[in-house]
Image (tube, rainbow, N blue to C red; front, side):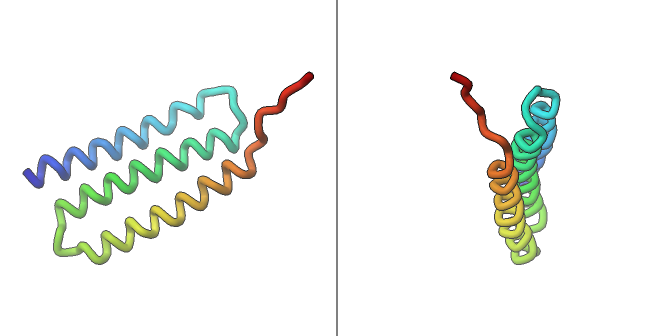
Length: 92
């Protein structure tokens, strides 16, 4: 059961990694593309880390530290990219 959960989380994380590259092909600004990439990268990396937690439960303090660092660092980076991205302008 734990192997199934572990491989499921790792597979979901890899899916998020590839899914995040799709917006790079769009016509939006570079910063918007980087923001969407950082969000999917955060979700994918955290999912893979949870999958590793199921594989190596004896290392839970280090894996928990990695999860916290991913959540804080990548979330802040995503907000900075979203804030720097130019918004939609309306022309009257």
